[in-house]
Length: 183
Image (cartoon, rainbow, N blue to C red; front, side):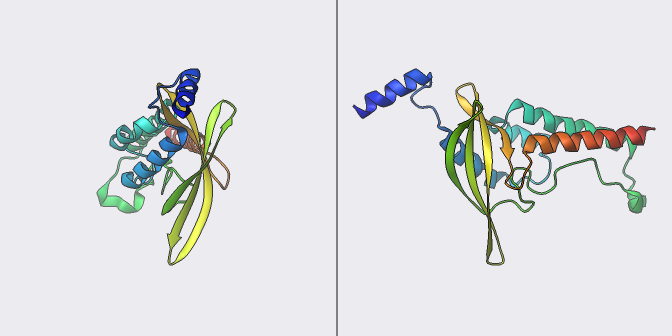
């Protein structure tokens, strides 16, 4: 009887019986996150590795930072003879790009899964441990469907803000700075 109910539920939802749940996807995302060890804006090679986990909007925003970096390098070529004149490259979220803490996370646990405005929201209870002290917080993964699977559409950070909003703000700030530098 239990199998019949599950089969009916998957048929009604239009999902294959082997489809990954949002909770399973979030678990897989955070397990992969530990292997990635990404700091700052993911490089093109890192983006190829993480692409199956993220929405096309997030990947497009990361690609915009590549264009800004190229423009920065054109306007301010690096001269190893004059390191004192070197400028910091354009905006990049430094540190851990996928959590609310620069240092990243030490552990995670997946919490509640709820629907919010047509998206699936998955709580991620995260902790950073340093010098015997634990710093806990909860970020929220917003997931969208991508074919038969899930992708991260955004990450809502515990201290406020979100991945996409932060990226758009950083890109806009860098565009303004680059525009000013061209004058």
